Length: 481
Image 1 (tube, rainbow, N blue to C red):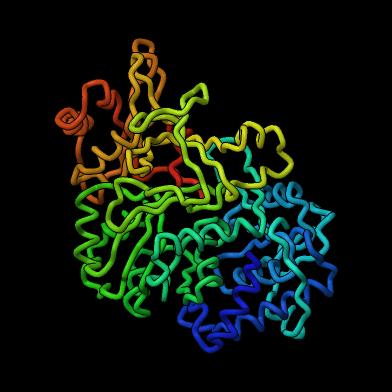
Image 2 (cartoon, rainbow, N blue to C red):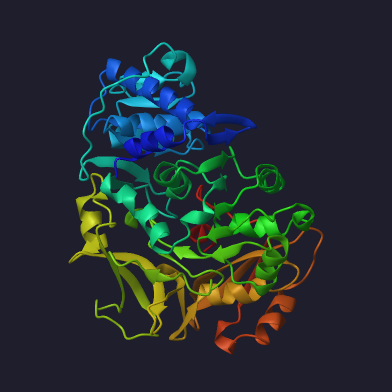
């Protein structure tokens, strides 16, 4: 998808419609195209051409979005970076990506550390305002590289996932396929624009002309205020955000009747939370979905309010369940989720061996454990590396987590496997309690004993104030181990 062209088409259809609302300031589609084109002309003047890598190192802001689309307008490659990267991490990814240009805040001394960096655009408005907003648009081919997403991961060094302009078609096509585009009039998002989850909102902006209420960061109470104030119709979230939102005392005080839907990828299945969401958002359907950066997520989205599964594969992808010998498993049996189709990434940049490990015979091995039912619905059971083998018996950590999460005094929980001389591995639960709550290890074990088979009951329970997370919100289970 020529995503910049799609956005220009939306601006022609509805020039005065709000494109972004940020900190109560509205930018129309027409205004956005003008600022994008000025930035594109600035890049052209300084030598940026098709295929060049341009990094973006900013907090969530309109400038982040304009930078993205300026890069896409030229058929260059965007390298979105999380603003929370340390200086050393930033230098590392700039060297790895070979980015020659960067949109950022001022970066003192960066040229000495990254000599190949030609230009730092550290004041977006001042540096681009004198440029023309007219330009000749180059032809964008589907197989041109569009973006390098650096995966946060939980171990090892970050990997750059290479996606082409064709990959940018996948998310809009999924939403059209499941027929929920009509819910996308006003979207509120606090997901980082440097990650695929936040980027999906921009794909929707371009494809369907939605209005985006953008937040610099997720503050639960501010999120609710934005939904009420701007009559938001849809939002995307990751589970920690969703849980934080529903645990607010003020949740039901806000008028959230405008919401028509919410997509929580990897949605928590706690019945109490789902019920509370339904009470607070009476006109909204809850969706669950699945996908990876490596597969141009999302690749599945559930039917409304059937979030026990993550839905079915789109017709242009195949999803199967393989055992450890790469043999397909029958329905209902748990194994590794594999996926094939054009949404699968080009590969990891400069990592041919890692790419070969991940993609075999066209199948991407996701590392997720799951199963399929007779209708083709996918159920995610956890990560392959998170399966705990207790005396030869398999324990899927999400199953234990879901049980403990139901305890009324538990805020969040993560379950990991730890070495045990007698059993090989033992189940360990790391629990963060709600404010001013106090329970013991024995209380958790007793709660589990009523709901789980004996070998799944945590052998160790540890209490912490909070769980360590990656920048994209995933619990860092390797640290807990």
